Amino acid sequence: MAQTIIKTVRYITMNDIQQMALLMHQIATVQIDREIMKAYLHSVKGTLREAECHFIEVDRRFWPMQVQSLMLTQHKLIMNDTDTTSKTATPMEIDTEDQQIACENLLNEHLQKMKRQIEYYEKELDEKQSTFIRFTSTIQETIEIHVQTYGIKALEMKRDLKLALINYDYDSEMLQREYFQEQPNNYQIEVAKCLSTAKVEVEKSKRTLLELKYRVFYSKPPDSFDSSGTLMPTLNHDDQGLFDKHEKAIQRRKLD
Image 1 (cartoon, rainbow, N blue to C red):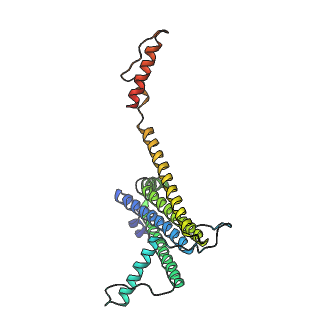
Image 2 (cartoon, helix red, strand yellow; image 1 turned 90 degrees about the vertical axis):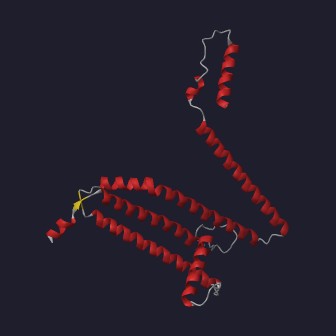
Image 3 (cartoon, helix red, strand yellow; image 1 turned 135 degrees about the horizontal axis):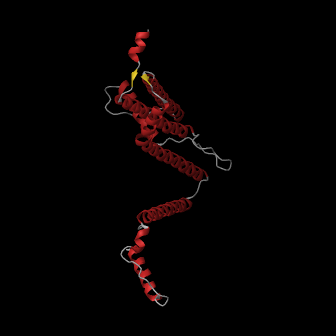
């Protein structure tokens, strides 16, 4: 037994560090995908947002486009497995409640699969770390920081964008359902569409203005530009006109 331990334990190499970094990256990647899948499940179950008391009662279950595509793909796979002679998949001939249950089960299956993947990668990482001599928490933290900075940060930004879009689509759908629950006439519907379009244009204009402000801020000339090429001569009190002319020249250069 002692001989086995001596053979297993060894010093860490650069290849070992790369493998550990890869496992850390895989763990974080699956965790991020799992967070997005959880948001899909909450949307399907109608629990993505808490309904406020003054809201009109509507069905809060909503299938995002990604979930619909996933269900359609799953249905095609089932059709291909059960009917190998069929060239095209027929629509799912089950009622709404059955579809809802099937969708929730499918998403839960994906979540469980992702959980098992995370546990597998974590076990692989723990086993690898336990075989090294002098593997300290400082080394582990250094690898984690590197993986976070150069691998995970960009994925987290994409995750935040996807979650924001999921929440936006969900809120938009709930508002639309509540509006149509009031049974508006055609004129009211057209007015609502015009208001919605106008609001979108306002938000776009605000965003464009913000981007322009950032561009101006990051493209502004350095402070040393004030005197660049237009050194201020020594002036007397009676040379105010020359001073103003010099200031205008600096402003023109900055504007250019």
